[in-house]
Length: 223
Ligand code: CA
Image 1 (cartoon, rainbow, N blue to C red):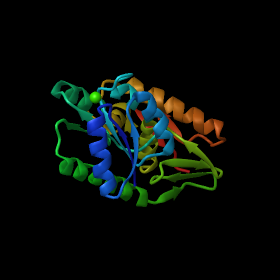
Image 2 (cartoon, rainbow, N blue to C red):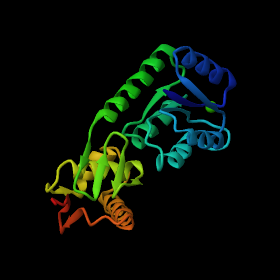
Image 3 (spheres, rainbow, N blue to C red):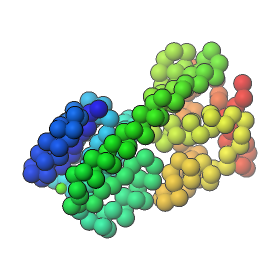
Image 4 (spheres, protein in one colour):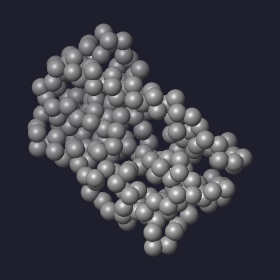
């Protein structure tokens, strides 16, 4: 398992690196937001992300990564006020840890997230027909064998609808499921995401799979 640790205080960074290396993890280190974004190209399994970085804040780093990286992000924050913000920001798989933290507690938290991810990886693929396969573990769609990567929220919507073919979900319910009750957007956000999913699948040559139920919401086509 590979961790990306993003922390600008050298003492904390080396302490974290030593600890997690001793626990058997591969560790990539970054001291700035820019380095974090570069480090993310190595596909870490989990990111420990300090919120207060010299060049950009951790939330902006997270936003920059979220679109193409499905791995869990564990924020490290020194302030309770920041923690509140994070809670609203990351209702999905992400989490935060308040500084100062105990290494053992942090280690347990990292392990729990990775175990959950691993379980998700063992979930099966669903083959819808000859054209479309969804791999829920790897969070990838295949259209005629070509992979289509979706950002996290878009994939979450696809996962929700496709595992309940024919069932109608209203936009509010989709929003709650994917963003959590604390999300700052609204059901228009859902429509926008569905629009983007459709565009990408269409571009990949996939026949329409998400149907609009006018005045209500969406459902996965039974086919
Ligand atoms: Ca810092």
